[in-house]
Amino acid sequence: MIRIALYSDTWACQSPLSCFSVIWSSRCSKTSNFPDMMRGYAPKPRKRCPIPFAKDPEGLVHSKVRRTPDRLVKGLSYIMEDEPDVNNGSQSLPPFGGGGQKRWFERGESFKLNTTMKVHCGFTRSSGAGMTIADMRYVKGCKKLFCFVMLVDEKILSLMKYRETVEEDIHGGLRAGIWRLIPLKHLPYNETRRNEEISKLLIHRLIPQAQYSIWVSSKMVLVADPLLILERYLWREGHSFAISQHGYHHSIYEEANASKRRKKYSRPRIDAQMKVYQSEGLEPWSTKKRVISDVPEASIIIREHTMLNNLFSCLWFNEVHLFTPLDQLSFGYVAHRLGEAFKYFMFPFCEFNSLFELHSHSWDRFEMRFGGEINVA
Image (cartoon, rainbow, N blue to C red):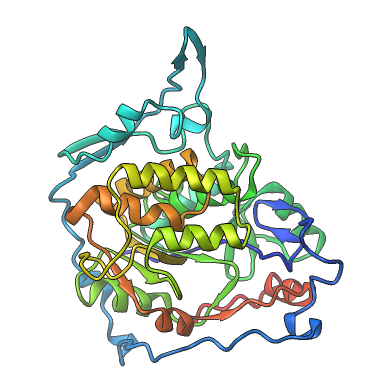
């Protein structure tokens, strides 16, 4: 059994830093790296509620937890060849495994569940993560260990080294406190948001030995024991995939409108994505649906790496690759296309708030954050 806390920076406008690039946003003011309270207003308090964790964490015997059987999808493989995209007689290699360049027919077929399946899922033979030998050896050991992995790009790694927050262990690996740093090279996109989705949705490809993973956004400071999280959200009631409800929206069309108002991404691209989903039968969420919401708060993803969950992650990533990197817009669509076969636990947003402390975006907290104050107790 394995727990992995996977860490990915998704810094907001207030921070000059991102896990996958070092950028300044033109929408940020010169003083935007100061906390909100110093700019004249304070953030609204978040609603919290108690989390019914196990009372005796020492009594958890995770070796006796039974893995979820792969009853429907028993075999999952990935298209590794760089298949050319033929269009009007011309050929060009599809970027990053063809997740968005493959024909619409192939996209539709990937949602039809079979005992064995082969799908596009990011990496191909010529587009790997570029891990070092030491890092590959480390992740192979995650089948027997509890691994805390921070996936970064070379720019943020250089900055962390400059801030003297990185140490090298006896095996040649890099560490920042409890976290093992694994730089991802040859990132395929020129958009930071899309590159971040690689660490978020393709964990089963980056660390295939992992049986469970907990992906955590860097804007959150986890204040709960990962083992208790697995017991609460997966093992106790037999779930294999857990994610929080969104704090405000239930329908992806509501979330799309909010994303346009907040200028999260290009309006025409968001509109095009919603038109496709609407034409393919995704209705706005209502109480008549079998799920409590179509929109997650995707800052934490708790999952068992079953064949079906791995397939869901691949298809989710393919939608991000094809349309917009706003993964909250595509989660509900992929779940809709897989139907009742894909079951997930969407827990209350107030519990999500109780799992974390919000990370301050000030520069001083950044130095503390990467200086060994990352605690997962």
